[in-house]
Image (cartoon, rainbow, N blue to C red; front, side, top):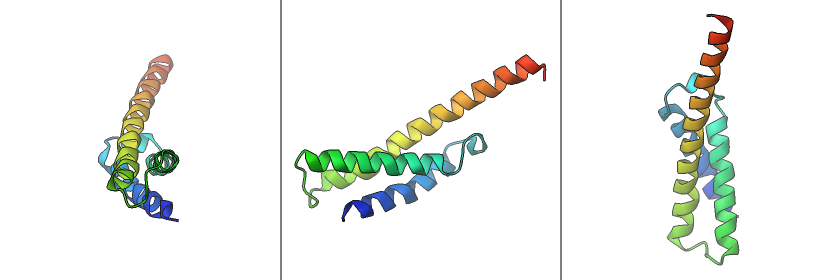
Length: 95
């Protein structure tokens, strides 16, 4: 049940990360928060399976901050990929 706290925190902070990364018009509004939520769920679950208890601060730090780092990296990569793709399409069309 505590995993919901980590997921909600990661999703809410992921919304903030979406607005901090430049060129947010080049990706969907739910992409970065969705990635943050999925990464948080994966990190939390893996650490629980590894034996880390809910009372351990490393579980919370890794599942929230780690998810935000992953979401920011993927968001920057997606934006750069979209920018390159759009530039090549414009060049092909002669725009």
